[in-house]
Image 1 (tube, rainbow, N blue to C red):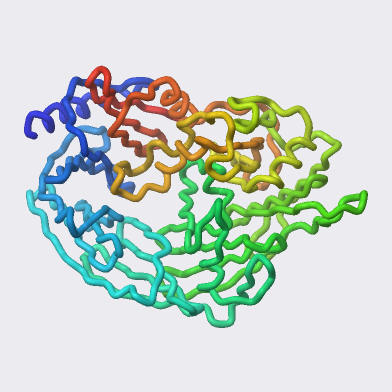
Image 2 (cartoon, rainbow, N blue to C red; image 1 turned 120 degrees about the horizontal axis):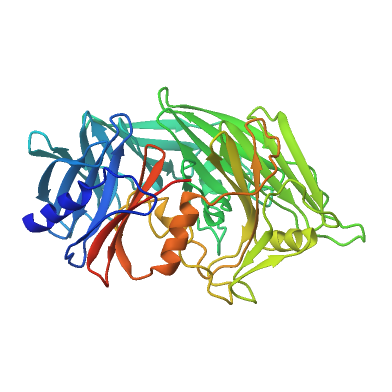
Length: 483
């Protein structure tokens, strides 16, 4: 193990020269069943890299220049009891890792004090028989487990602070308006438990990290959440006429309800036939970006949470979409591979028969927006590019949660139809050609290099650093990618 850590040290200490491609590569032999992941401390601009197997967890502390400062190892928690790593927080410079049993009722925490070569552990017992797990969130100060209390209008947050102190907070949503997709009245538990399969399972709540590009697979879900260290926003788009936003204050543990209505589109065509209507939203920069479409009409709106329209665009099936910066792309489907669609009518007709969504991502002062639709898993006759926003992620390892990791592989075995548009910070369309993103370059790299493992990806100082083990050459390599 010492020899392997030394090799990793030699590898990472060469990251002074920041090139676009390989920044370092070194021979190293990695055994199977090994996970590599990291926690980035944005405040201190450093990274703790973890190398874990079934026996030990090794923490390697890297400074802002990617040089190793120190390292420490500890026994991995009991594998028979603790199935997975679920999150982290940070006490000063020391990361604390949280592991959980399969039912989340037993939690194990490890605080890695690298500078003093000390690991402190804590155990917690949660009672969750009357709750459903929804999601987990990590930041520097606190780690949260979010649940919904059965047959109620109440959310519950299980909070672990940076000192390791546990508390539970109930957020009561009595008086909020909950309706299922068929307009029947319900409670919060019923809304979150609505079966939206084959695309979305009951009690699924997709965690969106807007700092990274979001795939349409995630963006097209009807129940999403957006977390920062002060606010948690849940959005529910099961009803095509409006988005329901639940804004939770993580300092006061209170919540407010916002109802943001989408554009009005008739579900009856000009010839008198009933047609499908689809809608979805994406929460970004304290605003709601809303897509609504039928086979004949398409609306894109930007609204604040008070339902005020800040900007709106529309398109019809018989005219070009004048707010896009890309061709209309289709991947997978009956033709397989990737092809370009010629008309707006093709785009509108296809997305209403798929799971529609949109996603936003900052490019400098502008916002790149992807509009489109995606099928459920297995609804593609062709093999879609396997490495699109999900094979790797901010924290990598089969036992570790990673919203970003899910994105690169999320288009495999699916049909995808999409366009992209660029907008300024006031919502005005910006004309011009789009440049490849770091994630596009990473995706292209994985398209050409499939025999890799032990991937890790993190964002630091406006760049993505990708580490991976090349199974053929037996080398661990780190590359730098920028937008």
